[in-house]
Image 1 (tube, helix red, strand yellow):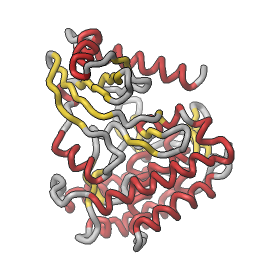
Image 2: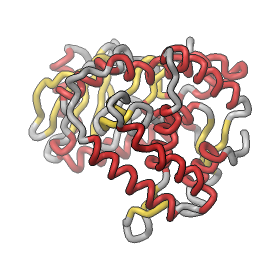
Image 3: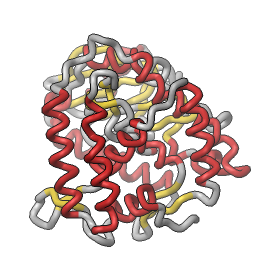
Length: 328
């Protein structure tokens, strides 16, 4: 089955699950409300989420999203995110409720999700992907320069303790080949909480479904799904650019593109130029974020434990931390 068919089937399952949870509100009711709000016919977007139902207008200019009450958006926080990543985040506006379901209107960032654009991005020695990576560098560096001082408070000391405790569990629980790297990261972790290192809104799910690109130019047109964004040290989500350098395949794991090092160089060259004075704490934050995002899994009892040998997450960490990966 091709990627588009897989995404279509997944989206249909997510829509069905959303309305089963949101009953008695129906999909027809939501479509009707979206058409009233926008004044245009609407249709479900190609890519859906696990906690929402999203439609786009016929003209493609507006998106309306429906969210259950336990997944409502923090619009004040989203305004800070929009400022931090200006030009990369859709503007969100609350436009009421349908029953207990919250309704939001936003501009359509356009483009398509990255995993629907792989063929175009990877053609001609990844010519368009190089543009995507340069724009991705602009996206990340924007938070350094543009995060507002008014962004919601985070207890730096408490967050440092939380991260260190989690990394300590990984240091003792992951295979020993990761121990040296984890030890180095933990020793430098307090530097990420110093007063001169900014706390920024970090997207915690920078996967291909949330990254939208223009298939004709490779331009990064927007990042979606900011619901669970965390305020944490700058650079903690920087490992997200690894998703652009390879493909995670079922029953195979992570595989890098043949020219991944050249693509990596494109990203870092653009990023360092935009940052002006590069600080190697960026790398500490990037590695810490990769471990925290990919180092844990659920066991058969639902407990969160360090990732085990053979798991997709550990194969990914082997590739991005230790460089143990094949190229496709």
